[in-house]
Length: 102
Image (cartoon, rainbow, N blue to C red; front, side, top):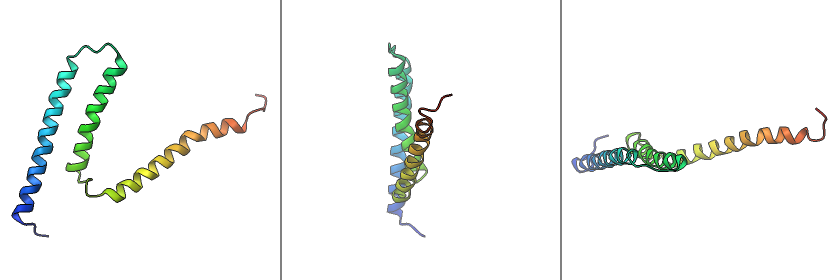
């Protein structure tokens, strides 16, 4: 499928903007590492937030997941359903043995 020169320029512009955002977020990550945050939990939350944004940018644009929204949502719903079942499974087995002497 042949794309026009304008479409190619648009894609390149988007990729360069994502690259710039990733570069800025990398600098933010380095800058945050020099901060002395008292709470370990707060430090981890900041690091995970920055890493999540960077991961979302890479997955969305460089892996072309932005254009695959419908299938991604169905896979996400299926993953959440399996997660709920797996989290409830030990609870359900524990409830079924209530009142039985060990």
